[in-house]
Image (cartoon, rainbow, N blue to C red; front, side, top):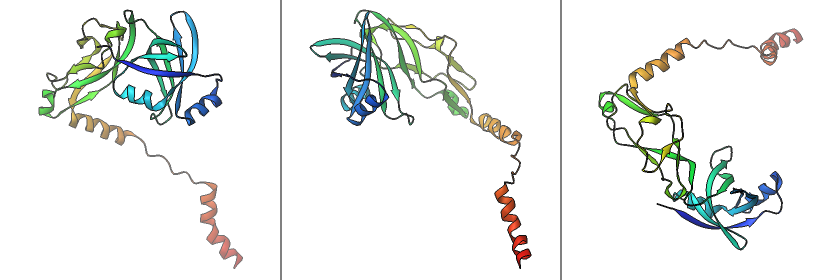
Length: 220
């Protein structure tokens, strides 16, 4: 199902880190729009409207720039060092009927039967790249782990993709494993035991502290 978010962009007259920081202080996200053999456009978007739209699963938006509305795809988002706030967005112009490459999050479903035998499910990657029509980008790729037993693994090639989508990621990418908790803990304990203890480093400050009593005695 097509999910379209309608946003109005403001053209950025000034670019660069200082100008971008000023936009963010005003509650806006600096962004760039490119693609379809048209000139890139530096814009900014209302942070609240953008974040709410993303949280509701919108990937495609009708973006109004000036008097013209363009259909764009959220291609990439850059976050701050805490991974919390969006500091920049890359938007690419799209035609609803064209096939595009997009990164889609993975959603694990079910309870693996291996967990009844002390196994634990580990997710090794949280997304896959697929190719599909811009109008049919799935919100997530569901991976059913119900039949996984201890020692089982799932790779990208094992996943059933939505109709009309094809895998763009490497089919060998490891997605999920089911392994024994005890074995995993034992491996961690062995690594800790094998790790050599760090030698004590006596700093000049420590030497001075240890020497202070002797110096005091000498003064007396």
